[in-house]
Amino acid sequence: QITLKESGPTLVKPSQTLTLTCTFSGFSLRNSGEGVGWIRQPPGKALEWLALIYGSDDMRYRPSLKSRLTITKDTSIDQVVLTMTSMDPVDTATYYCAHFYNWNCEDSWGQGTLVTVSS
Amino acid sequence: DIVMTQSPDSLAVSLGARATINCRSSQSVLYRSNNNNYLAWYQQKPGQPPKLLISWASTRESGVPDRFSGSGSGTDFTLTINSLQADDVAVYYCQQYYTTPRTFGQGTKLEIK
Image 1 (tube, chains in turn purple, orange):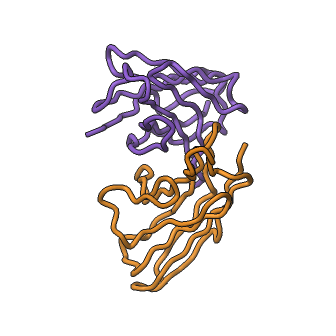
Image 2 (cartoon, rainbow over the protein chains, first blue to last red):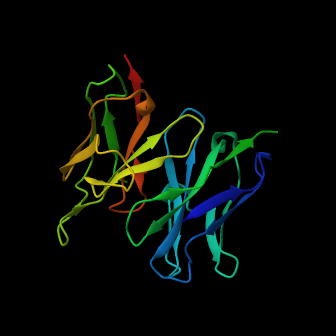
C-alpha cells in the first residue's frame, strides 16, 4: 500500500522560502521508474501541477515557476522535498504530493497541507 | 502548455440518472507509438485529495464502480457516470500526462438535482 504525507509550515511571510517535505512508503525512489510529483490547489480553485522527480533523478518543473522551484529526493529516508522561493499571497494553497510510476498519472495522493502566505 | 477545457463547469443530475462530463485538450494526448491516450479523470470531494478514477482515458482504477466510464481519443474525452448516487457529488477533473507541465481542467462540479 502506497502512502504519502506532506509536512511543512502552515504560514509563511511574503518573500520567504517555503520548504515542504513529502514522506512516503510503499515504494522506493531507488527504482528509476518510480516518481513523486507536487500539485497545489488554491482555495476554491483548480489543481495546478508544479514539479516531479523520478528515481532516475529526472526532474521536471512547471515552466512559469521553474526559477522559484527546486525538487530533491533522499532515498535513504523515503522523502522528497520541494522548495519554493519568493513566496507571495497568490501562492496560498493546499500543496499535495503524489506518486506515479513511469509516465503514468498520479495514482496515490497525500492528504495535502494548507500553506497560507501572509504578513 | 496543453490547455484542458472541461464542460460544463457544473451540472445537476437526478439520482439514478446519467451524468456526462466532457474534456477537450488543446493538442492531442494520443501517443501513436503505443496508441495510448495520456488522459486521467479524478474525483475530489470537499476536504479530500483527488482520487484517481480512470487512467489511459478509459481504464478504471481498481475499486472504482463500473458506473464510471471514460471514453474518447486524441483531443476529446468524456467521463460518464451511470445511475448517479448521492456519494458521487464531487468536483471532477481531467488531466493530461502526455507531457510536462501536466495540466488539469478547471473542474466540473456535480450536484444532485
